[in-house]
Structures are given as C-alpha cells and as structure tokens.
Length: 581
Ligand code: GTP
Ligand code: SPV
Ligand code: MN
Image (cartoon, rainbow, N blue to C red; front, side, top):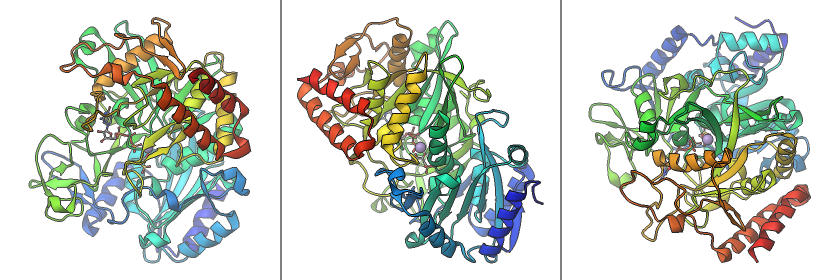
C-alpha cells in the first residue's frame, strides 16, 4: 500500500531504507488490524491479557523500568535560531540534531516492522483539525494511537486532500536512556523520537504534535494550542457553558473533565459533559469568542488515585477495551493501583510479587489508554467541527500554601499574568524529583514549542482581539493543613467552585476585590451536603506579606525570559505590587 501523495511515499521509502525495516505496514485503523497487532503483542509478551470476565479486551503493558515517564531533559526544540526556542526549552541546532538522529535511526528497524500511522488531531471534518503521520516500530504505539487519535484510512484521505502533514518519526531503539532523544523541528513541522516507548515521548500526536508543534503554528496563525481540559457544565435550566482549564501534568485535568457533581447538585439538575481532558485548541470565532476543540480522541490518564469515590466516570470506562501501562495486578488478574478501593495487589508494575518494600504496587505514573467515546459523560458537542464556545479559562496547580481555592483575574491581561506566574509541585508524570515547586506557566513549561516571552505576547494579542474574551480564574485544589492533609475535598466537590465561576461569568454574583484578584465573598461557595466544613477562611485568605514574596518570585521568573517578556505583563505585575503595598 501507499498513498497518492508523493511527498508521503518518498518519505516512507527513505525512512524504510535508512532504518532498514524488514517490512512496511500502512495502518488502516481497522478493528481487524488492531486485533492482529494485539495477538502479536500477546505472543511477544509486549501485552498481557487481563481477566477477560471482569475486563474484556483489556491488556497490560509493562514498560522498561527505566522508561516510565516523559523525559524533559532529553526533549529539544530545534528552531533555526536558539533565541526562538527560549530559555523554557532545551535547544539543539537543527543540523546537529538531524545528524544525531540520523545516526541513531540508521538500521534501527532491521528485522522489524515499520508502521506508517496516519492520524488526524481533531474531528476528521473540522477545519480546525490538523493531521500527521507517525512512523514507528512499536506496535504498542500503534494500538495506543488508534485509541488516542482518529487514526487510519479516514485520516490518510484527509492528508491526501490537505496535501500536507506533520512528520513524526519514532523508534523505541534499545531503550537505553543515554541514547534517548525527543527532538522537534517547528519550522520543518517534524518530530523525531528515539529510545523511549512511553506516553508523551512516543505517542507523537499528543504532546509533540498537538502542543509543541501546534503551539508554534498557532502563533503564526492567530490561535492557541494549550495543555487544557474542556468541560461543559449544564445548569438546571438546561444551558451548557464551557470551561477550559490548564493544570500541570498529574494535577487534575482528567478528573475535572469528567467530575460527577455532588448529590444536591445532581438532584437540582446540574450535569457535566466531557469534551477533552488534556489538550485544547482555541480559535477566535467570528462572533468574537474563543472556540475550543479537543484534538485527541482518547484518554491517556493517570491510574493511581482513580476510584469509585474520586472518579466514577473514569472507572466505568476502564472495565473493557482499555490498555493499562505499568499498573499492578490482583491475584485474579484484574488491574490494580494505589487508591483503588477494591482488591489488593498480587504483582507489582514490574511483574514481581508485590512487596511494599519495593515501593508502590502500581507505578505513580501508571496510565490507562481508552477511547473517549467510552466516557459516560462524553459531550454530544465534542465532535462539533467548529468546537465549543469557552466562557471561562482556569489555571490551577498543586500548591500546599498561598494560592487560594479560587480567584478571578480582573481582566484578560491580569489573567495572562496569573497564567504566566503559575507554579506547581512536580509530579511523577516526568522523570526527576517529585514534589518541588516550580514555575509552570499556563501548565506549558514542558510543551511550549517556542520562547515563553513570545508566547505571552501572543496570549495578550489573541485576547486583545476578542470581543467577548473568556473570564480567567486561578484555582488550587491542593492546599494542605498542618498535618499535610488536603483542606479542600476536591474531585466532585470542585463543582462548587465551578458554580461560583459560572455565576461570575453571568454577572450574577459579587466578588471581593483584593490586591491579587477577585475572591468569593464569605458564604458564596456552596457547601451544602458536605460532611465536614472545610476551613474556608484559610482557603480564601490573602496574606499580603506572603503575596509580596510571590510577586518578587514571579518577577524574578519573568526576568529570566529577558527582553521578549511583553511590557504589558511587567506593567500588570507592577500594578499588583503597588496594590500590595
Ligand atoms: P496528565 O494526564 O498528566 O496531564 O494529568 P491530569 O492533569 O489529567 O491529572 P489527573 O486528573 O489524572 O489527576 C492526577 C492525580 O491527582 C490523580 O492521582 C488524582 O486522583 C489527583 N487529583 C485529581 N483531582 C484532585 C482533586 O481535586 N483533589 C485532590 N486531592 N487530588 C486530585
Ligand atoms: C502529561 O504528562 O501531561 C501527560 C502524560 O498527559 S504524557 O502523554 O506522557 O505527556
Ligand atoms: Mn497532560
């Protein structure tokens, strides 16, 4: 097979020759193809079948123990000029990167099948969608791409119509961490990834294409590619309003995207509709609003912490047609992870008999891959070619202290400052130390394909052109008390905060002005039905002294981006500083 696009055929031929692949397989995305690949992986040991009675068509993949998360220190943006990648990225000169990768890929698929995976990010017929082709030697990547994107013949047809596509080249290589590189060529619209089979390192449609490459394209084309969930909230009158939310990796996007409202809300008719849980492409519409599509078609969600209590919608979709990566298994071969409220682990994520001395049974970054249409709260607007209109954007992070439960920006520019100043405790989603506070602007630190200074300027420009920009909020579900426990119950109860946010968007409720933003008045967050009353005074406090330190820390952070930081952002920060003194 081949395509009727010469550029694609030539590239495939050239890669096949260079990697010395034994066979080339063009993926059509069919059920039969998927079945065949699964059977081969069961045979090779890449996959294990989970309990077919409790979990039909569910499989477990155990990755290499040294390949369990994104590797930010080995991820590069190779723009022609170093300054265009910015201090927020590792940079390598394109020629050097091409030479390095050429060496690594030489002969790396000898004896192996090379898969050509055409995919479409976004609904096949949406003008906002973009396509790519990933060449990979990993059948695990193929079956994941089939769940995560619109993959196969339909995507290829669109690529042939469009005449262009993002080129992604991937090989698991020998999984040697010293020979692992994820490199991006934004100006060439291409990606090369070698030496990892895990998540965002290997499923190139996700972070590599839909964020790093797309953010670069979005800047020149006047839109935004963001690390955001998209959720619709239906009120008792039947009106649905959409919120987009940026939270760093493993900080609650999947959970918020499919939350189940507290009982009292459900009884009065509130409903939640899931559009996306990780990536959001935002386009200014002719009506002067921002419209959002989810470029993905599936979830690659964090398993630990997922339970009937915290995320029943997720649990409901994980009992069939799911690929689990690095979870533990029970005696009767059901998937298991920390926080799951039933069963106990027999084997840990590495396949060893479970022993707490070895650490958690499931890897903290263990994941499930499942098609989004399995989600009980999947929105009927999610496939809409023009997307959904966004009323509010929220920025959140894990902060044990300081950041209040919720706060509204006074206007778009102040909101951009809140996003640029975001900080969060690091998680297991990337290799490195966990639990240290780092600045993660707009939750895009690892994903913005160009200089953050230019990125903030772009944000200001996009907002400046909107007739009705979304209101911007900052939230924090992760405030801790003296004993280290979370003060806010979180999960479904986050609906209480979303209700306040939407009431603000509709101009239905007053807020308290503080130097750092607009906060709820006492009693305005609905706490009805909570067994324990959270310490709201603490959750909504603004300590001027601590905030002055924060403003200094944000200023220091912004200054690391030099002259490209827009003046309007510095001015906004000065305004906050003044207000605090
Ligand atoms: P990525 O897929 O890495 O981008 O992560 P994500 O932002 O989608 O995070 P996810 O929703 O998967 O949550 C990550 C972890 O945070 C899980 O262990 C959740 O159980 C936990 N979590 C999510 N929401 C809340 C919350 O409101 N409160 C608390 N305490 N924990 C939460
Ligand atoms: C994240 O780390 O933000 C993820 C998982 O969503 S990965 O696909 O590995 O990027
Ligand atoms: Mn993510």
